[in-house]
Length: 61
Image 1 (tube, rainbow, N blue to C red):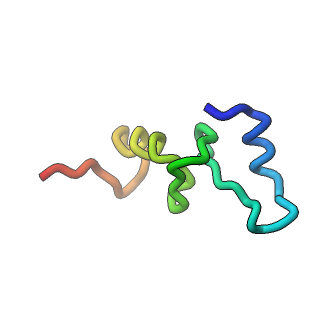
Image 2: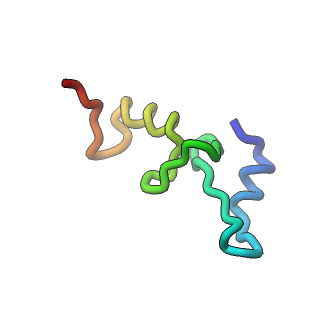
């Protein structure tokens, strides 16, 4: 879990566009970020398994 100060700093508009840091909106994690869902891989999996993301289901074959 990221500190609140780091999350707040990431939300501010940077001086240069290339300095933008993507963080998970739920937990603040910066690694394993998925742009399409604005979530990290861990939160994505939790929410998908609980059925909170429409159109997704766990695959099995």
